[in-house]
Amino acid sequence: MTDSLTIRDNRTGEEHEIEIVDGTIRASDLKKVGGLATYDPGFVNTASCRSAVTYIDGDKGVLEYRGYPIEQLAEHSTFLEVSYLLLNGELPTSDQLGQWTHDVTHHTFLHENIKSLMTGFRYDAHPMGMLMSSVSALSTFYPDARDIADPDNRYLQITRMIAKMPTIGAFAYRHSQGKPYVYPNNELSYCANFLSMLFKMSEPAYAADERLVKALEVLFILHADHEQNCSTNAVRSVGSSQVDPYSAVAAGIGALYGPLHGGANEAVLKMLRRIGTTDNIPGFIEGVKAGKEKLMGFGHRVYKNYDPRATIIKKACDDVFAVTGVNPLLKIAQELEKIALEDEYFVSRKLYPNVDFYSGLIYEALQFPPEMFTVLFAIGRTPGWLAQWQELVVDKEQKIARPKQIYTGHRTRDFVPMSQR
Ligand code: ACO
Image (cartoon, rainbow, N blue to C red; front, side, top):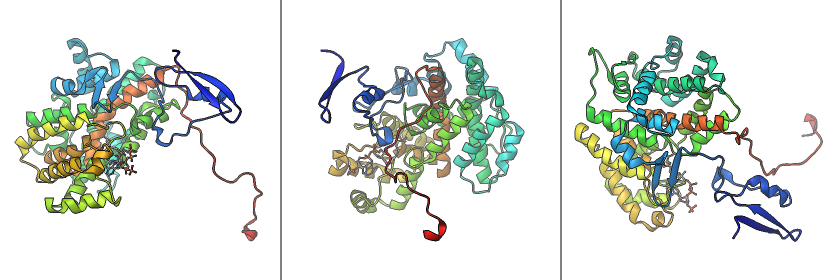
């Protein structure tokens, strides 16, 4: 048996042999079949790159970063260690982790003009809009970031971005609260410092509950990468023009903002609140089945069995609620999940809770307003975006992203003067 595909073009009777490599054929090889192209809205069955960062088996519910199962990383690792793993391909030694932690920690401060830029937003500005604009603005503060061919330079920009993301996110939160921005405390760990920048008031040092710090580490780890999802695809697509990484990541933040992607956990909370009591669940489910709306936090393009992140998050819920008290919406979520998992509509479509179904409940228990949920997702996803961006930059096979179209409009026609329209 050869690894190839024989295509018979019934229009001409000609046969063409096309090589199969890694379970794929090259779309450009189809050109020789009478100029054929593929049509794939949403890239449902198209590989856009080779990547060694994250492996997902959607049918089996497997998620691995650089070969390490997400369950083990969530249990034993920290977010910065996982970031190092994603970016470098291997877990760090103690010295490497020490250096990496030092480098990230010493880039947490923002230029004061970024702070001024942020104070210019309206009091009710969505923090994702503030995050996207501020990250984009960083490209003007670090014009050296355009030198993407230099590995040392890439390292510097990657460090800066992972370091500054929580600071920008926290400033955006404080802005919405009308509270003074809190500067980073470099004595604290990545997540403890983030909580300090969010919640510190007049106390000399803010000490977050260690269990909440751990929960945040786990949440960030779960969100750190997810191969070619919508926002990563945006980062790669924009990055393929060889723009600086701040501009590419700003595009990723824009993609993540949407309710079908990172905005889903915010939508889940709104949905649960609207449902209000468990009595209203059957009526709500009927509405979903009638196509009136979606059950937010359910379904996934890749996971058709279960989302392994959802299982870990459910456990993190228990840990957080032990500190903060149970979120009353949890009962509605659990009942909704139970009913949906038994319902033929959801079973036949392989719709299971995704990572966002429970993450919003934890975030709310940690006292984040819903608008901040996607910001938390963005902070967690930043090392993944950057690992994928770096992979793209050094990948000789990559070209500027430029899909084809099937043109459905008019063909050549003469301009009609205004008086004749
Ligand atoms: N509620 C109700 N029906 C759904 C849902 C849902 N959440 N998700 C999919 N379906 C239905 C679709 O209507 C479709 O039904 P049909 O065959 O009768 O037309 C079928 O299930 C297949 O769904 P598709 O839309 O083809 O699946 P796709 O892979 O394109 O979409 C997506 C995946 C966008 C995640 C979708 O399931 C969805 O919108 N879910 C709700 C939003 C959400 O939770 N997003 C978070 C994703 S995880 C993340 O980004 C971190």
